[in-house]
Length: 219
Ligand SMILES: [Fe+2]
Figure 1 (tube, protein in one colour):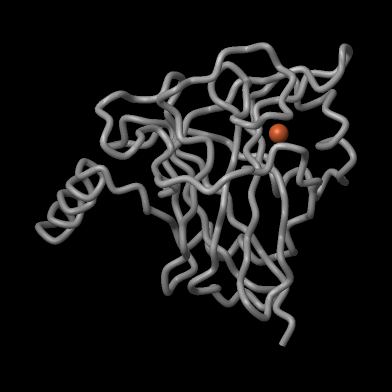
Figure 2 (figure 1 turned 180 degrees about the vertical axis):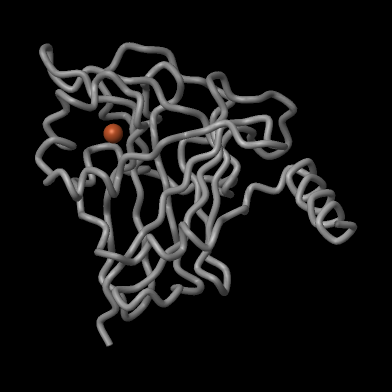
C-alpha cells in the first residue's frame, strides 16, 4: 500500500515537474506492428536554419511570451520493423501556427504569423526510442478554394541505416479529416496510424497525444 502511494506521488511529481516524456508499455507494443506510412512533404519545409529549434515550440529562446493557441504534448516511440527501439533518431516537426500560417515565403495564406511561435523543432530519441514535443494545435488552412487542410503536423525521421520517413500527424476530432485528400489517400489501417487522440492526462496541464512511429531498418 505504502509502495503504491509512493509510486503515485513519484508519478505526480514527474508530471508536475513539467516533464512530458511519459509513455506506456502498451503504447510501445503498438508502435511497431506495421511501418508508419509516408505522406507528402508539402511545400513548407523550413527554408532557413534557426537558432531555437528545440522540442518546445511554444516559447522562443530568451522570450517570456508564449505562442498563441492550444498547447499540446506529443509523446512517441520510434521503433524498427522488428519492434526494436531506435535510439538517437532525429525527429523533426514543422507546422503552421494557430492561425494556419507557416513561416515560409511560399505560403499564400493571408493569415497572420504568430511572432512567438517556433514553427519548427527537433528531438533525438533516447535509449528506449522515446521522443517528445511541446507545441500548439495548428490552425487549419485552405489548400485550394474547395479544400481545407485539417490541423496536422509534419514529421521527418532520420537515422543512418534506416529509411527516412516523411509523414503527417492528425488530430482525431478534426472535422476536416474526412475530406482531406492527403489523409484520405491512405488506407483505413494507415490512417489510424497517423491520427492521434489527444487526451486530458492527470497531472498534465495540457492534452497529451501518443504518436508512435515505425521506420524500416536497412541492415
Ligand atoms: Fe501542412
